[in-house]
Picture (cartoon, each protein chain N blue to C red):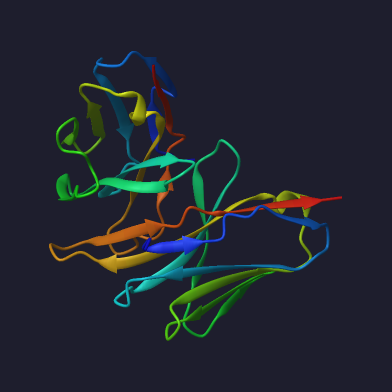
Length: 114
Length: 113
């Protein structure tokens, strides 16, 4: 079965350190989304790419977060410097434009910033 | 006001019961509506779309009320395996192109023996 692959599954780091999360979308999918999930806020959209171009990153704190798609098989989300309030599960999802509602999510990266 | 609001629950129901969840959205320009299911410590997965005329998929029925801006999900004859968090999702167009999917915080369902 085709699936979205996220690495790492778990990350524990200290405040101030750089964190990089990676996502391999399903082959052939041209949209990629980064979401952050916490108990209080639920799933929040951080960034959205279509054909590798960023369409929406309004939900992303620009001072410390950055999202890129260096090629069609890799999306990255970086936090520098990380803070304890960044602790959350970060999900990557991919889909096909035109059927954006049918998103396929990766297993997520559980991030803990101490 | 949040863009998509749901009662967080939990809804604790006995096996075989009928349970309904509601969801309200604030953007009247919203185009499409969906329910996703998320199991504990897992990723969300699409459960079903919500059509204007209402739609059914087995034991699951989804309804949309555009005038009141709410969506509902009805589960009949609930099973233990239905225990999960149900996420209401709303889609609208972005000004620069593409679409935005906004998720509610989810309603937790626990089906008990």
